Length: 504
Image (cartoon, rainbow, N blue to C red; front, side, top):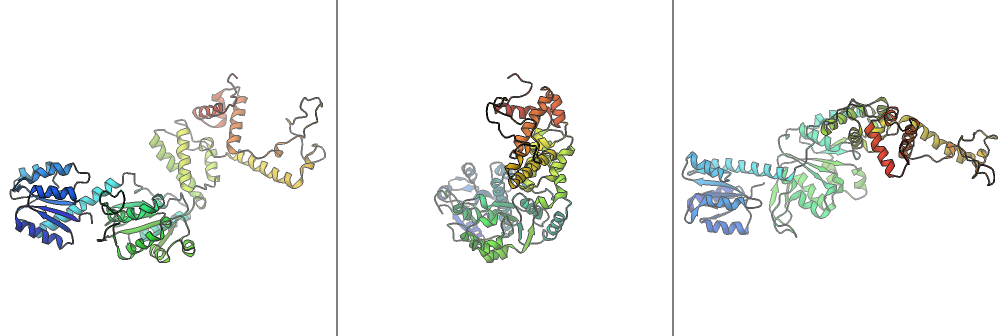
């Protein structure tokens, strides 16, 4: 619950006792006073979630307390109690910062409704304060491949249920997107969706993040704080990378899954929550169980309905679809209108094995969108992927090196007695006249394979040299924009390269 501690300020004993009795039946902590001074003393020492404040008091007006409460870091909600039911007084109270007001005499059902409204409001405020990042809710699972269609079917079946779901998959496959889809299609879609990255929170703090803490529970706990499970009450909680939590927290998490209850760190009050749990992992949890790193009973509690997110290499039909979707998104984001992908870029997208999965593809497309000239097509060069011709040459070089190691250096001695022919630029000696011992000629096959960036650099500079330094003509031959070529030449220049067409 997000409303637990309540202060009642009213000079009428009957009102105070009636409210105390009703609220304590709800197992709430209640304190009641009759004067403004007593109320201020309690506010200095303790924290409260809700105040019932009478207007006419022996030592002043209850509404004067609103200004003091407004200055507090985490102010409680204030419900004004008044015997004057005029619209003007109600409006004035709300303008001064009151959450609501009730008119004497009031019924127990009115208090019940007010408490429900206060609880919902405080939870909503806490959730909005806690999470400011964009949510992935609403995004769709893109793809027509068999693995993604099967995943989509499984998601649609389990989403409307209350079953706990464990999502397995490699890093970058989109496990959080699947979790968001489960939430979007669930009956809890209008309730909180709270995400916890278990791998990003230190072991000493994760228990507090999960379950909250009381004031003074540990050094730095200056005030009471609700944990993520409390914030998710009535909704869904996503435990991202669940395999990273310690055995101690695993035991407490097991209890939450079994009983839907826990205590805050430093507290002894049992808090009950209604939460649906979704967890993700990039590890083989069963293997972790066998290794003793993960509790077996917790594994079975989480693995009620397992889902597996396929790697991008198993979704080859989806690569171009995803690339187009990302290109449209980032074109809008960066204000760059593009004409799609050229043929070489499409081939490069399909042939790349994408070890970083969908996340790598997404980052690659965003970079390419930024590098591409407005109105142009995204090229393989902009993608930073090896064009097919370069890849073929690189593979050929690697195969030649392997062949040379098997055959031996002797078969390349002169270019006439073997199968290899001398390179057109093979050196014949230091001065060309034979005064020094001749250096054994080397063919391109004798060279070690070059890194992709080096191949790309040589190709760009040779193309620019062939055009006499004409950048417009070179960019057309290379299939990249003038801006992309200019950016790359700037990098080469900074590395000390000679740029054809520029004075040395």
